[in-house]
Image (cartoon, rainbow, N blue to C red; front, side):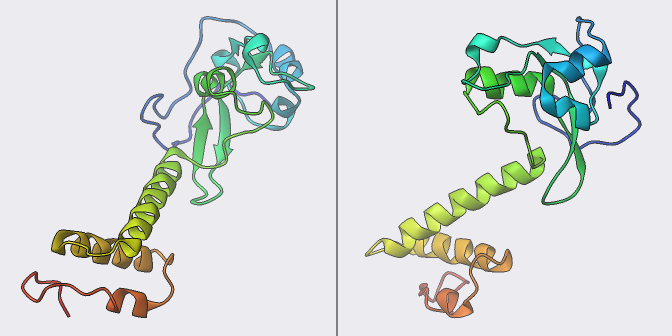
Length: 172
């Protein structure tokens, strides 16, 4: 299912961009499709293929012998994005991700997930803190409002219970 043409607009990746990255290597479609079981069923860009270092991959029944830029669709926002060969090399050879995993969310949605997790963690820290300062109470209220607007806090009463000083402009 390889493809060397690119007419789509992909979600921007801060490190790799939004277009397939041509490599200096030359592999045929057949070589790429044999390099990993998944490549036969996805749209990939043949001219982006780079060799893999199988010794650096976590133990797998079927290692990836070649990495290639793959077109994916984000499971959250449904926009097309690229799972870059260079990104795969980093995932599988440096970070040690399981070789059969693949990217299911675009970079924007991954960054949004991280921000929400940071916000939830900070919210929980502030909720559990006794003797919050006024600034911490404001931060807690703002985090609670944001989490409520995003649907992570369902009960508005949790927000209303956060007490702020009367002179801060956010008080009740």
